Length: 469
Image (cartoon, rainbow, N blue to C red):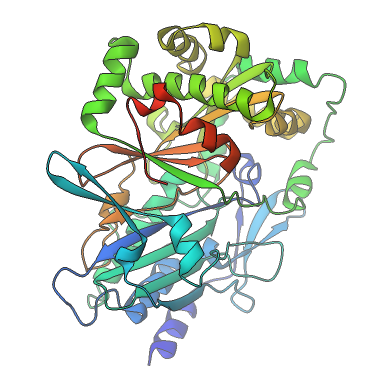
């Protein structure tokens, strides 16, 4: 019965080529996704039904996101495209797994003003569950672009939902919109007249048309990376960038994740201590920049020349491009700071330096970054090798996903009770989530284990943060 329903959904998909934008292909080979923990509070025997969730997935793909079952290719005019061929679909990979432990076996708990706050310990899960890692979506082999795992725990009211999708299709905002639209379609499977209130815009021409109205201005960090790699930077022949990037291997998934928790009170105390005139994000970025540099020095026994701070910005909030645009429209603001200056300065000094570099995000900067990728790909590669923690560089990539409606992903069984892994696992990227249990924030850190060993002993950091794992 389910197979017939799924085939019925797929039969409505039409052949089409969906052109990718430069902002899509620039991150080809990376993934977005996450792990969401749901609680069966009503003892529903059909809780998080794999059949319903799969039915909803196929429905939302067929009706709104055919790009998810397409395959990347190069068009005759040299553009990157996703080819949707009804006879050769890149089918989703959906499976249900069982774990012979209570979900609570993998929980860490903390007490906050008498309330118990729960966290899901990924380290313990991968060590004990029999699942050593999750599969990742990929286009480099004949694997699925959309991977879903529903994980049931023995004698436990909790169910975990793992999702992995190619970043080339969605940025964080668009991915979370996809998850919520999928959930909405699942909730309305019994309603043949249901339509999404805010359907996605898949046409990448929306962005290219917008940029046609913008005059590019080069951001300071682009010049910085050009100067760093001046001898090795090469020009890219016109019309070859898509073929070059789509031929790149998958970006290895960074598996060394850690979690810090900040209560709302501690986060506000941090802001007051650093500079009450600044935002909590800026105060936190300053603290992390200083403490991660200190841990970096202890790890490598040397002083790196540069300390980089990166903030990704969703430009939908800053332009006329609709919020329902489903491609990649996020850009990075990067502050290159001299490590000695960071080490010697106060957190207030660091916060102001970061603000000076990262608060001036504009459409003009964004267009310049697109032009740089299309014509001077070496700058992108130079940034890629610089934005990491090494003997030469210290790096904080702080991604604030608190504004994304992740807590609202409801397949008809309630919203997720606990959020786990960050949606983009790349070394140095730190994801800041809201914790709805106590109103604080969770900081998921993609940071090397040996560096974290020093970081978790930092008195300056532990004054505000609780180490979960």
